[in-house]
Length: 508
Image 1 (cartoon, rainbow, N blue to C red):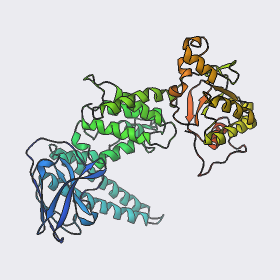
Image 2: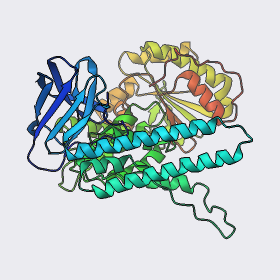
Image 3: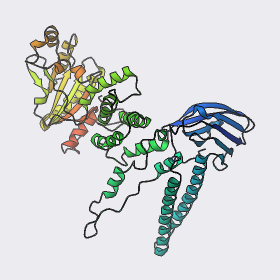
Image 4: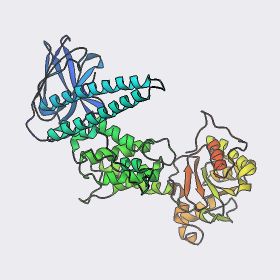
């Protein structure tokens, strides 16, 4: 069971001082092994073990960082407490650890326990009033007004109480926890001469722009708290920001820029945001991850070293090198140009010079099983829809070595009529012997090395470009490509040749 509401938790590093014993009397439990655990973000990790004997257990506080810790009992039940370099002595009884908690020694925990009791009483009162309000009939207007006013007053009383606790105990860690969990108060919106709001979205914008005002981003102790992680995740979620990479970057980066680079707070923010968008299911969010790596891992800090001081040097070097390639292949970017020949080695196609409303940039391998299924489907879409709607397919096949003849045969057998180019065997051999016989007269080094340029580690791969050659989508399946382009061009309701289902495989 939890001593603290998950919206009111905290800490990692803290005020220096002499560590004290952490002593607990827990009745109603037989002698057993208990563990001390700590928060790292919203997760709990083991940090110490001791024996509960005759209802008492003691941990050595000198091993612990100030923060929120928890005593983990058998059966995965636990109760939490604040440790901030003071002696902690608490008593409780199983199984209702929270209700039976008594603070024998610990200013931080006494303040917080009193606060939690007040909040519970206020919450129960608000729930009772809301239940009564919900049960009123339409004709009971006056009673509804009275109950609504009581609920509003209760909210104001809670806010005043929170502010008083924070003010009266400003030197404590618990005050920062409480302040961090307190909602930002939005002022009245500016109005014009006729008392109409000048900006209807004022409240949202104020809340967004001041979201982190109640959090001390210079205090590393606040890192290991679920409330901090919850705050961050709420901020970059659809509840707050448009799920577009440019919006995320616009509003997340200023927050990170305000945090000291050498701090744990910086590491936590950077790691949390980067990991989240690396795993995001929203298309295009890899752009956030790439820009996070570029700006907050690989960029040099004030000390002249990469900002990601917590990473292994070799792993960081590899990450930064890969990001240099991948950051050019994200939504909104114009990807590197390609100039490659067709199967005759006589006609060369320049990607950036293709005149089309949209271009499907497609990489494939004639020996790849998935490619053999996908490529003919692209031809179907090209024949039935895309060609007449000025959508071109720029297809880059693997055609070096023995793949050259297989590539040409596949094109012929499947009657592929869209643009089919490759680093063909003859061109590859010529470039290997003397690259300057082709560069720059025919092509570019990036085109010759297209696999590295486009990070083609597997096939098939796909990007969709607009008329300005900017990337607008990537990693779509055939049904997704069809639906996406139909909707972009105003053909949302036309017949679909390929249906989307749970088994549809995306093209990476």
